[in-house]
Amino acid sequence: MTRRELIADTGLSKATISRVVDDLERLELLAPASPAGCDASADAVDASAAASRGRRPTALTVPSEVGQVVGISLGLQRTGVLAVDLAGRELSWSTLATPLHADAGAAVEWLGGLIDRARERTAAPLQRVLVAVPARVVNGVEVPHPPSAMPAIGGTVFAEKLAAAVGAEVELDTDANMALAGLTVEGFIPGGALPVLLNMSTVLTMAMLRRDGSSAHGVTGSFGNFSVLPFPAGDGESTIGELLSTHGLMQYCRRQGQALAHISELWGGDDELGRFETTLPSAERDAIVQVYTEALASALLMISVISDPLLIVLAGRLAPLAERVLPRLTETLADHLDEPPQILIANARTRAHTTSLGAAHTALTAVQRRLRERLTNGTWSID
Image 1 (cartoon, helix red, strand yellow):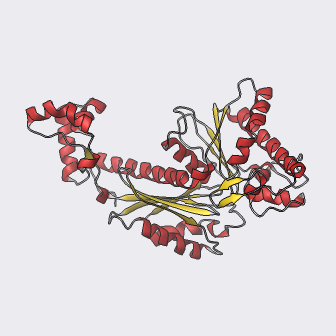
Image 2 (tube, rainbow, N blue to C red; image 1 turned 180 degrees about the vertical axis):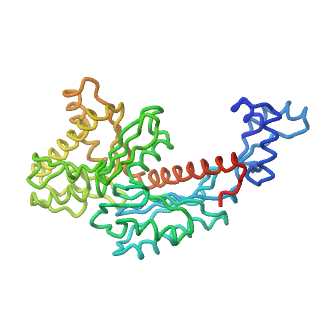
Image 3 (cartoon, rainbow, N blue to C red; image 1 turned 90 degrees about the vertical axis):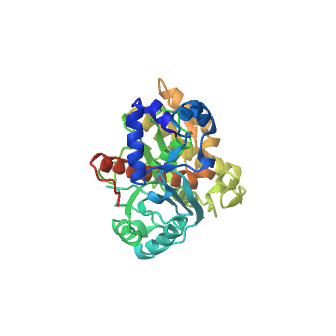
């Protein structure tokens, strides 16, 4: 943005903006943007004023060399890695299959290599890494109950080793929180909606916003743990968390004598791993889908009664199945609630980029906040 736009946005005087911008330029925290990044319309508006003071209106930006952050979506099937500079510009993006790791050391070695490659485009120091994981997270570093197929991320060892390996702060967060953050950045979430998001992937995770817009984090691993809630309509072993996760729903199918090679076979259609056709007999498939629908309706009613959201977002690998049963869900909510929430289905095929985008944006916000605090205190360095 130009100096004139800064004056209009902040209400500060021309002299104050000029002094602040000049100071930040001396500290190499601001620089003229490249011509391709300038707003021609803004320059046109500024042209006469600029000519009168002898300064060509130039868009200002934070140089890429100041620093960068990396956001990661660490899923059981796929991992997405997104690096952005401190102005939020994308530096690199990649997605690849997630290998199985038996211990934290092997997982850190692999993920650390991905981070090193992601930041190769610029020599800017790495300020922060945020990893979205398919599990509930405590205090930003601890995974008390990792997925059975991903034991390497359990406890605090994974976060501690990764921070040591990459030489930067590392934070873990649930994939639901980062999916919600990414969908918000992408404009999918209406402004001021304060939604609840259910991420139905490897495990069921939940994101919830407080009234001030911040993410709700539990004190213990029990927060959002739907796996402790029995669901007798399934069978004696069923829980809501199991039936609304890919691994759990496949286990339920096996207990019903219907083994699936891939969860997408339950409804048929395209998946990021390929196209899968429905192989189950229609009666058996309909019975399983009905149990899933009832479990999801129970979860939505529970959330509505407790937190009263205006919007609930359904995301993750099971989102296509939720979309197919949406009419039944909305009917159930309308039957039981005076004012049922709006239900939105997020596109499951974009989740790797969406979640890593949310992670990168959240990490970026934290670094920018720290930079502002240090500038206010008279210390400009963010090292």
